[in-house]
Length: 332
Image 1: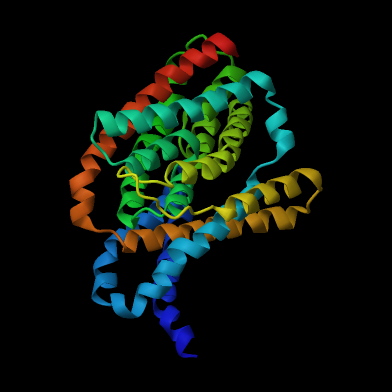
Image 2: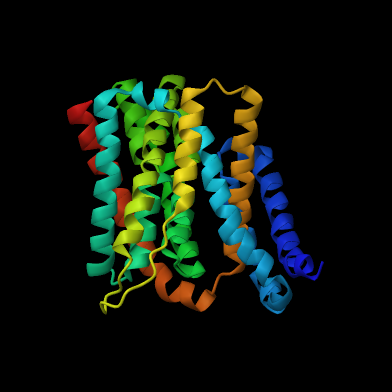
């Protein structure tokens, strides 16, 4: 019983923040702009961080459980959003563009982050991964894989979220002014290949047309699926430090769970209630993880590194906007 109480206080704190985040996200003005409850969760967590600091001894275990263990379960259940059939429907060009975006942004972001913005490798990777794959969910998964400090995940999420939201509003506005010589299919590939969050893709795609939204979501799911090989490769790259001493290799087993759910969702005709329940559970658990990370924020470290991380996210957003347009215009 004592073991239970060690976790209860922190878990209840995170749960309350999560329920508040989901409620706020459901309000009409917020829902209209597709603002993710993950974003709201981290903001509320940050606002409540002083409360956590004052009671850290009694809450730490529950908050850590939410930020680590529940996160991994949420990533596994995220597989209910992805199917192999949907991925195959966009053809070879869409798949190759998605692959090019993920690999290109990861490599460019890591290099630019370290060489130009002087970020450490972990933070540069987290910002790049969030920009390249699927926003906050990718940052959380990568943070868990490389065992980085919580403040780095918060900085990366914050920087990626800002430019994802800006792009979500920018794309429909640009489309209303000019199609830029792209068909609706091309716009769908463009939106899906270059926006950060799944919610950003839904928001921008629905603001243009149903056809664009459908194609964009499929392309986005290809990028989400590429999270699996990234999670398997990245820990190998971080297995040794710059000094040459060995770091324990953390194999992200939850990546295999994610893949298993994707295959299950693709091979079997799962009932609608199971799919919707899996997606809802995934969202709920990821919001809990984001809320817990927000509670753990260290403002001093955030202020020290946050500006540089936002600079990197801005550069990557520009690369996605202009480089993605070039890829789609030439190859789709």
